[in-house]
Length: 126
Image 1 (cartoon, rainbow, N blue to C red):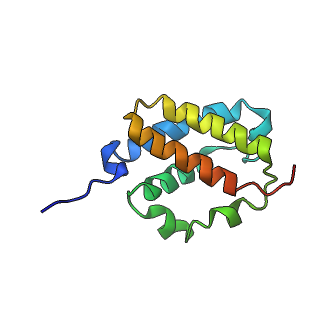
Image 2 (cartoon, rainbow, N blue to C red; image 1 turned 90 degrees about the horizontal axis):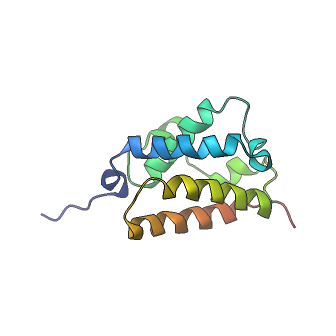
Image 3 (cartoon, rainbow, N blue to C red; image 1 turned 120 degrees about the horizontal axis):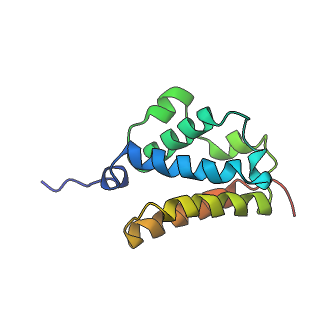
């Protein structure tokens, strides 16, 4: 029997995503361009972002069980996201991802996802 291994399993599960997101939010916390997009206390943002990514990459569906369908664009609509905010968000996410030491092919797939998804969140004209 040929079982497919998910990205979630390949990277070691939730600890990978938790570590990556902790690093991401360290960078966000120090960046005035994107810091205002998040609440003062980043605890819940860290938890839900890691939970979403776990689910996105083949892990447990806790995010959807708790919050419903991801509907990322709708959830981000209340926040003014222009090209600058998107670019800074991607910069921090890719820095955090790059520090995780992934296989280059897997890292490339994740980079492509983050770049594409973040572009879809832009809701402010230039």
